[in-house]
Length: 56
Image 1 (cartoon, rainbow, N blue to C red):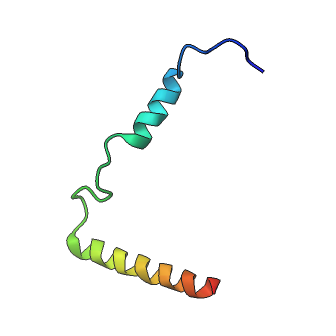
Image 2: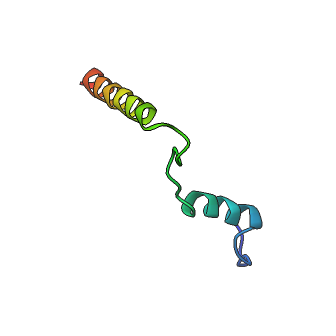
């Protein structure tokens, strides 16, 4: 067990925290046509529904 306090998070830990918390860009970020997004979202919705039914 460590008895002395640490100086703070390591640079790698700070980078991970920043990546997880900051800069929440939209997934598609304007690089995918609207029709493709709609098709993908419909497929994802159907897959979620199917998984829900399978689980009971």
